[in-house]
Image 1: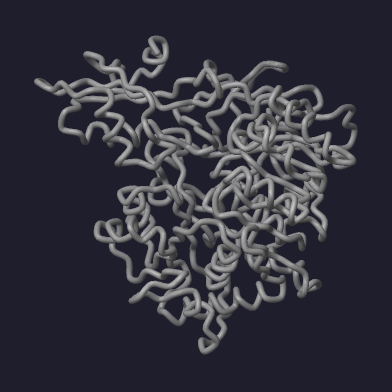
Image 2: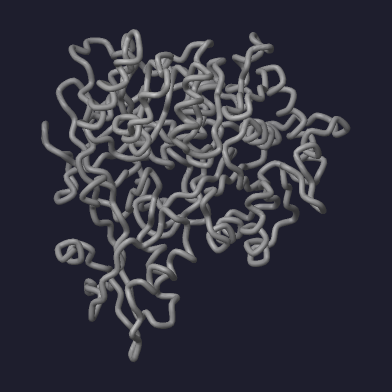
Length: 532
């Protein structure tokens, strides 16, 4: 049975992402759009539109055309949105690369996405150079200047004529982030202009951003949460997005204080620091009115602890809520509404453990994993979602697309949820293999492939195990030594640390005689979890 959102459907304009997101700024050209949280540099809404035009023109002048992929390996800066929207205005596709990736991981994404150009910074070049040896691109642009490479000024040059590319919002891709989905290796998630426009429009009735809002953007723009919820949502309603290149607690708190931040969209580890760390009391956070957590489950007690602590420094208190989504959903399907933005007939506040209501234009089903039928009222089931935010599919992977999106358009999330009588959802479990660590996806299959690449490891399996202190899932490897090998746990962890990004590192190793597998050869992870 399909469960509709309690909110009325919203209109989704049939326009490109830049046309939609940059429209509000036309009425406020001198108002700040992007602010560097550390340096204080400002790009106004008027400047943003002009710079976006220049980036589109100069990428076109370099020979790139509609549909070409431009990879971005860049931390959060005010220039990230400029370049993203320039790429989008030219009809090209931006593929964001995780700033923590190793050369092998960068090379995989460059090759799989078919990227023509890679845009990066000097600090990342020691990883870029070995990556492009394995997966060559036509050009590397180093934004902050490096001899022999084009730079930011080359993307902003005045000579190239403006371009006007016809965009089919429903079918043309705008971004290609990589996700492990519910299982397997990372896959390119094909998101169209309509997907992203829809998701920003869908959030509007629940998250009532004002023109004078200041949003702190410490969650990375390479993550779809950062790209849609922080960057595009903030700009679309005429607010100011204040960027930080990485999370440092004191920089984060100082930026909230100095820039009078009104909203923070975070992941649970940041909220944990705000609830527990003593340094928080040294900063004036009274401008902050709302904290919304996403990317990983938020503990109910932690939400209350953060709200109670931060209420002391704010006149009207700080509301802490959470939302739910995934890269394949652009990413939002559910969220906690702002006070006053509850759906018609709502009788109470959203409980802290809940991810809130389905956003407009969204249908949900809860499916009993054992029977494949709709779960009975009040019972848990795998969450299926249908709506305009659902991805077009996985790049060059029809099998994975068919596994994730069925013939009726339902996306199978792999998460188990329950819904109450008021239409508020709580995610209670996971049926998918994916490990979530500090909001990042960790695919067991990816780590297993790296482990098996070691000559002294004959077979391997990876699962997530809970950390007793933080509640985070930590990757644990079960390894079968090759004949004659005496490789140690420490050696396995050191090997993995060199091969994968920090959030993917194996934290525990256990040697076993054989990896338990089904008759079809599938790893029996339940058996491994039972002994973990």
